[in-house]
Amino acid sequence: MINIGVIREGKTPPDERVVLTPMQIQRISKAHPNVNIEVQSSPIRRVKDEEYSKLGVEVKRDVSSQDILIGVKEIPVDQLVAGKTCFFFSHTIKMQPYNKALLQAVLNKKITLIDWECLTDARGRRLIGFGRYAGIVGTYNGFRAYGLKHGRFKLKKATECEDRMELQRELEKVRVPPLKILLSGRGKVAKGSMEILDRLGIRKVGIREYLKQQFNEPVYCQVTFQDYFKRTDGKEFDIAAFLKDGSGHKSDFMRFARVTDYYIAGHYWDSSAPFIFTREDARNPDFKISLVADISCDIDGPVACTLRPSTIADPFYGYDPISELEVPFDSPNSITVMAVDNLPCELPRDASHDFGEMFIHGVLPSLLNGDKHGILKRATIAKNGSLTDAYQYLKSWVES
Image (cartoon, rainbow, N blue to C red; front, side, top):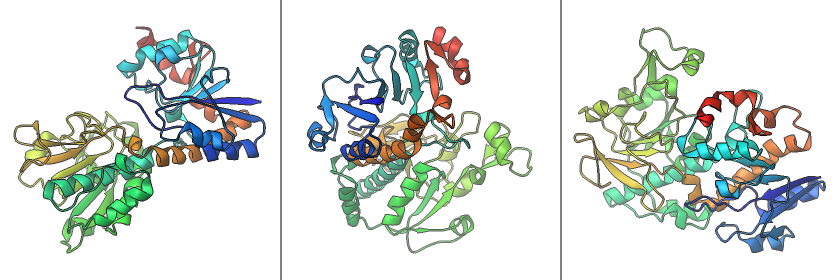
C-alpha cells in the first residue's frame, strides 16, 4: 500500500495552492486501489475541505501517519515529521541561505527529501512545476499595468478572479494599441505567456520582421538566449558551450530594446551568463522599453530594472534609468516593472489542477513502479540523514 498525505501549507505568507484536487484524488483512487490518499484540513487552501469530503476523500486534522507527505512550498522546520518521505519545493539546491536551517533539520530528522524542482526525465527536462501559470498571470499583470499607467483600461487583479475563465473574460476589456512586445524564453513560462498573447489576438512575427518593420497592429516576437547573446570572440554561437559556461559572451539585446515597448522576461538565466541589459543600457537614448513583466525575477541580475520582487498586493513599481532608483510605477519616463515572484498563487485553483495533472502523469508512475527510471532518485536531495551523491556539493554549506 502506498500511503500519501496531502499536507496543509504552513509557510508565511500563506499559499492557497495544493498538490492534488479532489477529482484528481478520486481518479487516482479508482485507478490504483493500492494508493491511499488523505488530505490535511486547511482553512487557507482555495480548494476547500468540503470539496474533498463531497467526493469521498478523507480529510483529517493530522496526516503525519502517512508514509509520504506532499506539499507545495517549504515545510516549516517545526512541522517536519521525522523519518518521512517528503515532496516539496525546498529551495536549497542553490544554497539559498534562508533555507539552510530547513535542510539541516531534514538531515537531523532523517527525512527523505524529494524536490519537485529536481524531478526530470532522462533528457533533463523538468516533469512538474508551476511555470505555465507564472507565464499566464505575469503576462496578464503586465497588460494590467499598461492599462493603469496609460488610462486605457482597468483589469481586475488576477488574484481577485475566481479562476482562469474569469481572468479570460477580463481580457475582453483590453484593446491593445500597436505595441511591439518581446518575449524571452522557450519553456513552460513562455508558453503560458503566449496563451495570453494569443488570447488577445496578438500576431507573432519573426525576428527579422520585428526588428525591421513598423506595424499598425500589436505584434510579439519570441527570442531565446542565442538571439540576444553573442560570443565576445566573434565566432559562431555554440549552444552546448554556452549552456556549459556562459562566460565569453556578451549581450546583443539592444537591437531588440530599440524597437520594443513591452518586454516579457520568461527565460532561464544562469549567473555565468552576461546580463541581458544593464543599467547603462537602460540610460541609452535608443532604449525604448517602458514596461517589463519580469516573470523570471532575478533580483539585481540580468534585467537591470528589477530592483526587488514585488508582491501580489502591490505588484508594480517604476525604475528611473537616470537616477537608477525606484519611483512610482506610472512616473513619466520610467520603466514600469512587474516582478511578482509567486505569480501562480494568484490563480491557485487552476495552478493546482495543472500541477496535479503533471503529478499524475509524470511522478505517480515512479511511485507505482519502484522508480524504474530513476526519476525519484535523481530528485532525492537527502535520505537517511545524509545528502545523496548528486547533492554532496551542499555538504560544506549545510554543515557550516
